[in-house]
Image 1 (cartoon, rainbow, N blue to C red):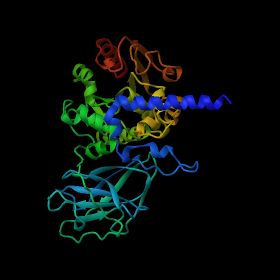
Image 2: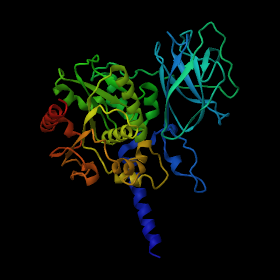
Image 3: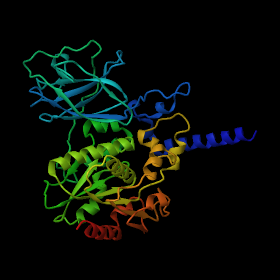
Image 4: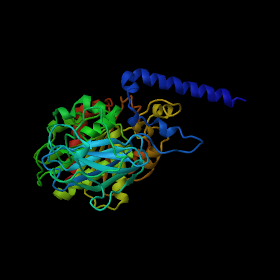
Length: 431
């Protein structure tokens, strides 16, 4: 008889916690759009989990053929089972850019290319220039939650050629102004570039779908690649941006190291973020052929980086990452994320992974890092977000060093003593 009142009190506490969360983050919480609201995946009917209805997977590819050069091309994703709504999500390339990245819910899709041949900013049906699988036969792509599908190519026809004939259900109507992808993997950007603004970083957290349309998830260089210098890749945390690393960036020995930044929407699922990090780094390693690099990650970025390193090890890729330094990472997740899963409410995807008992936390923390990687763990004793206590044994197992400093969660990145220790480790490990 005591179980029901206890359960009621627990659910009431959870509900109050959710109300508190909503109050703390105000309208940003309330404005989470449907494509980024992960709650429906937690509310299966008849105790069976249905397909996810929020964006949770990525298709990465490029357009080929004569049609795309000099023009912006819209890649439309038509959900095969949805004949009522036609095409939904899209990615719009820059002129003379062939790469695209689509962020989608799980499902089966036809991909259609529409090229703005007359440069009027509109994408009309008579400008349909290609589809995945053509010229032989239009094909579907099946994606599941968390998938990253790469190597997709869509051949486009030139302006003078006959438009591609599409099935009736392949129709589209995009009400809002089309967002073109502004950047690509390996682009050169200064650390103070407006793309790395706090406003954009917050969009990546609360509305990752809009961020993906504009920026995707890529690695950026601050200067042209130099084979004489060692790449040092920085990974930010939630609501983060490369600008979080500006203190380290300004003090780094630029004659010896070249700073790179992984900039991604921090509201996406962490396994997907790790997969995107792996793919973007694979492209750059194949392009430049570097043989060693270091990795530094802050906050939740440390969980993404750890998942990425474990993924690389499982796929038996040649080791070139020698050093992993994590700063103020919440290795055990957050209790508030547990409470947020109890009752129906708006929820961004990353919250599903940040609960203390989430599948992601369990899998990531119970797996060992590759033996070729030296892990140095930094934490702040005044870090209220992670509790300030020394990390537990799962996080510290196998580390080359654990260092606590009297600093806060964000202050750890601008502390002179922290950087001095980190710099000493770099010189020691990257010789």
